[in-house]
Amino acid sequence: MRIVRFVNAITGVPDEWQRPQWGVLIDDAVCPVARAPHVCYSSEDEIEVSGPPQPLDQVRLLAPVTPTKVACVGRNYAEHAAEFGNEAPPEPLIFLKPPTTIVGPDAPVVYPTLSERVDHEGELAVVVGRRCRHVSESDVAGVIFGYTIANDVTARDLQRKDGQWTRGKGFDTFGPIGPWVDTDYDHSGRTLRCWVNGELRQESNTDLMIHSVARIVSYVTAFMTLVPGDVIMTGTPAGVGPVRPGDTMVVAIEGLGELSNPVVADSFGS
Image 1 (cartoon, rainbow, N blue to C red):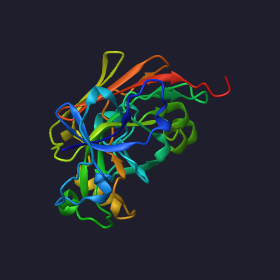
Image 2 (cartoon, rainbow, N blue to C red):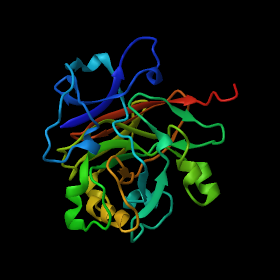
Image 3 (cartoon, rainbow, N blue to C red):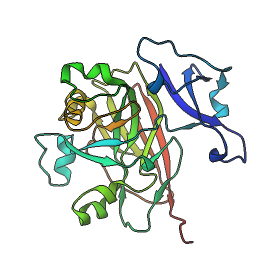
Image 4 (cartoon, helix red, strand yellow):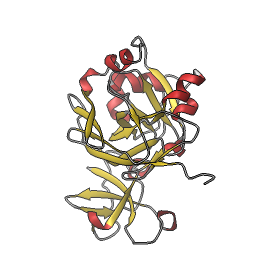
């Protein structure tokens, strides 16, 4: 099942003037549902459709998550660690992105005036479905709601300058996620790719993650409570590189879809 969050694609009406809705994607139509699926339904519940289906081309998809936190894993592919001269960490290297980084499909990523190098980082993301703490690796499947695609956009120069990653990873719009959450997705052995303006930049396989999804979730919940809707970005493979205003980034994961976002200049103060 693919869960989406959307507004009606009404020409000239800003998204913030509309009430976002949750829905289920069935073929090429979105069926609205009464409640946020990841919060209000267990795996045994029926999803309650609350309105007539709407053609996919008549809605605008938003980020399909509203998390309280976004936990991320750094250097989780050996070749990505090596491309910046780093060793692969023996334990998951965890950092946080604020929820204000999140934007949905086709939403612009703002290139901040404070940075001179912004990079794309295509990733598989996990969406939590149950409040959880101290989850064993063998029980992780029971707390996952589904999977989606993410782009851990990074101001690389600020990340290096600061020595810690909050500012470089935390700008508004630096967390594109979407286009949907797939609750039945098998993430094993899937090809992940990222293009910029049609040029292939990243290509790898989820089986090459150093730390598995089960290991990551268990590790995070050893020190942090996760609640329904929280997101874990599982790390990016090698091939990350700079983008500029006017570029378009596309992250695709086999069997899960693709996430496209343009890069725009920061208009603050202009």
